[in-house]
Length: 94
Length: 447
Image 1 (cartoon, one colour):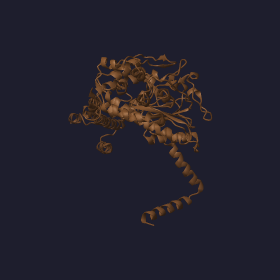
Image 2: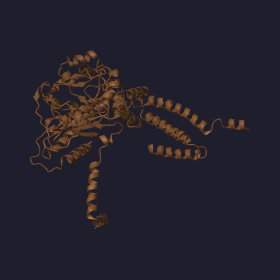
Image 3: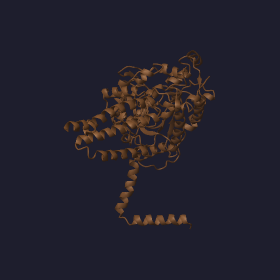
Image 4: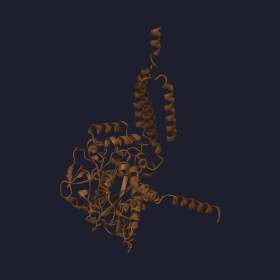
């Protein structure tokens, strides 16, 4: 399972790079996106290891902590990359 | 010649031809390189292979060690034993001063009456069976014997020490260290062994101990996190894991001692069924951990409290290890989780260590601990401190390594944060009901 997870992680990382290669034009875009991806992977790993090890409370706490922070981070990253709020800006320009 | 022999012969010829074709200097380097690579391989728990904690190797006990004249080390001439500070004269102890020995000989009162008064009601078929299996390893014939009359040639002490550790790992040890034997770790007298008691010898019998072996090989057996912690109602898992470790420790140390005697050197094994030595100072001397808040227990940087140790004392020339430290003194000062959750309140909540028999340690009410373990009305045995300790309450994982690493940085603020995160995540307080039909729950019955 660990090997499969690692494979999926790597594939997801490559997919993210391909998805963002035209949108992310600044160095801090890449830092935000890559660190978000690492954070999500850590969160999935934390929850998976704890739940398979019968540490259910730790899994719940981890899901909440990593989940909420990942959502907030993703929103900031999306705003920075222009995925959120882009249409409104374009309409204002027209 | 059949096909297999032909292929084997052909392979040998090819290998020889390849080797002969190399310059002699390259061949010598390759052989030395292979041997050096084998010797350089570390068992996974050794200091430069520790997973997680930053382990620092301290100086020799007493400041020096002479391999040409190995002797036991007198702690009264030293300032410290590892990270434990020595503040006064340390005296050797009698084995009967141990908690279980005192309980069983009636020092705390009639054992049957104490059990009845506490409402002890649990009997474990598995716990008894594990002890039954271990008893055979504690006879005098198993733990000791005359060495082979003629000594066999052995390599230098460094290589031999490495070999002994490899043999310990081969026999099943999860970690192995070699230390200089402290004089004060040897009991003055030994009580009767279980075999002697079965033959009618009273437990309180005194046998004076004379042990001049300079080295102590320590073998650690992992009690298994799943058994000790998760498959348990909070008590019995620790007892099962503990007793299984005693069983295998007895076997490993008896075999290793016999192995050393077969080389013509004296060797005597010490384990739960037959001790002549006190194990905690030997663990510290052999670089297996630091003395912790649970006043008589040594915390291992990787196994935490999830182990049991056996010792083989010997006069075989070996290069010993040095004591280590990895931030336990600073962590235990802040954590106090074992003290807060101890059901018998035997572990001290004090922030600073106090002098005891010439060295600093956290006070431990051995009487309260022992009586509770022997008369527990809620389960079989105890081991709650081992279960809740942050160093042993989780299995191998990147976050446990990260926590261990941060804990070994000796920062009070970081230690407090780690302990709080440990509490928030509920580590050490879980009961895995999924494992109800595994070991712990179904092996304990009402008396």
